[in-house]
Image 1 (cartoon, helix red, strand yellow):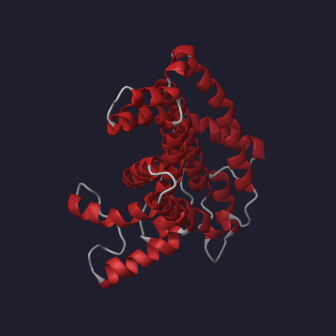
Image 2: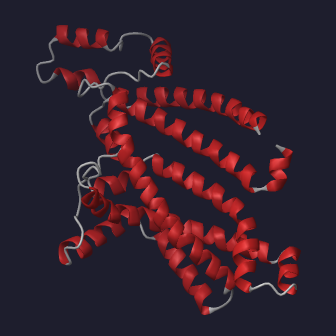
Length: 315
């Protein structure tokens, strides 16, 4: 197992290098000059020269890249051009918010997607199956921003049940924190639940046609035991993999959802950085997002091996 994990890490290293080069290169292609924005309206030539020297913007691009990646390897992602705050500090202040939102959204997705997928597979060809498929397709088709706006208008404005927007840290008020995160978590979770439902249904249908399921039924085992103990356990392999990858996507930042509900997470941070031409923040956030997504892919590979006995033996 350790050798298998080591091989996956070795594969991830060149991926990270390519991602870092792309992030840095594409950032340089963006229009606008951050120094002109920072210098204000007067744009004193001495101030412009000082800022370019301070942030090493006059160096050749390869020199800038190696200086940036060398600092990033030591945990120094640079200084925000806009706020003069270390980028790593900004990321660490926003990361817990995004992680909390991602966890709550995954709980919603798993609570809806897996049971619905199981029921749809067991009731294949019935009204329940068709209804579940229609709901899943609706969840995939409805845009997050539209659903978020509708929930705000209905639940917050008309019924006044939950706050419309904002974020309260759990250390200040846990109950208010949960109330402010419920709607954005539901908006993100419904889209993920639709994907999980479709994959769970497909995996369950494939497993339930297997010989050992027919043997279990022939032995007289209860239908619930056959479905939950035998079928679901073997159908979990693609479900676990998909869930891990979907969680990695959530960590990348739900930009529209965070903007609609005014949640100060990764998505809002990178949008603000792009509008402010804050190159250091954009590079740092995208690099950390890529690292997180690659880590979740690695975790998915490991979980895939742990769940599947044949692959575990091979590894």
